Image 1 (cartoon, rainbow, N blue to C red):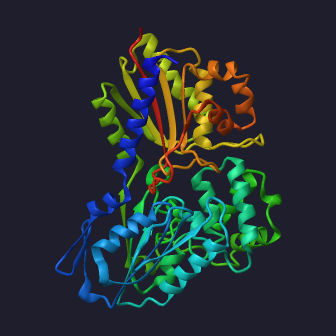
Image 2: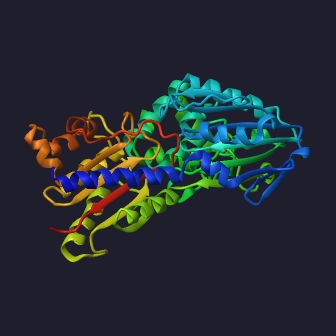
Length: 447
């Protein structure tokens, strides 16, 4: 590996960290929430605290602990009670708000217990109560309260099938909402007639509020029919537990009331504020890239598709920039964000960002002055302890020198083990934020 490639890899890390800092949950809350003379202002809405008997704080997601701390620091003793559910090792010590840790992405009993505490709290809320709901990515697996005729094991099995089949987050959450007592607007429905205001850190393509954490406080645009059809389209309907199929079939036939829609009166008491997005992270990363001497180009914050196929398109830009100086003359930093998917065909270990980086490594093999970084802003990628991986034009050659076949690792969805052996995993630890993934392509000046 040349000294210049080593320098570019360090620069890629700096650019990624700059993106993370821009979506720090505490800063996100501070930017949007103020308290002056007993008037709580959340963006353009004002809440006179004298109008409320209690303030309750609830929430779920990977980034919710620092969000809750910011709210707690601001409101202090105005908070009467609160419960949040976060991913393991993502908690923080709080004074007024109880913190419950649980498993992600496959839910567990601790998530159910924490969610039941939340539902019990909001169910008792009255017309003179203000419920502040904190929501971030990961909330769908952490705010887990299966409908009463479905067991946790049934829900876990459904989650595993959806994770393996390559469903998008929109498809995934359409199913989740129709198996839950909290998602798809149900939490808001349970809190009615309390006033509910939600502070949301987006981790979904398009920032659709009813998809982020499966939209517990907003109207649901999906139906039982949609959920059932998604499972059939991915050919996993017959693998579901009978109780899951039965519940969805009853809902599709009208025997079970659907999730609340936009005309439901409960939402007249609800408001939402988006406090952080992937695009904010990309813009900050672009500014850091420019400071380091690169011409930044943000392609999109809405990238979707199979990770290895998206990587092929993305890295084609490197070849184009080197050969024709299009779309920009190197040195250039091409940034994008979103959430790709992986259809599992092997038994290996990895995540969508590591798979993206491995597929990219194969397409940039041999190119000078090209570095690719793909990382989850939450610090985790799939069921691994890595946020993603870094690849460059020497990655494939270095692997082959060690007797490792990158194509075979990709075929087996075993990107983690390859990058671990090459010491190219992106290890950040829990970032306590979550605005999807960042994809970065650095192309240095041609020699």
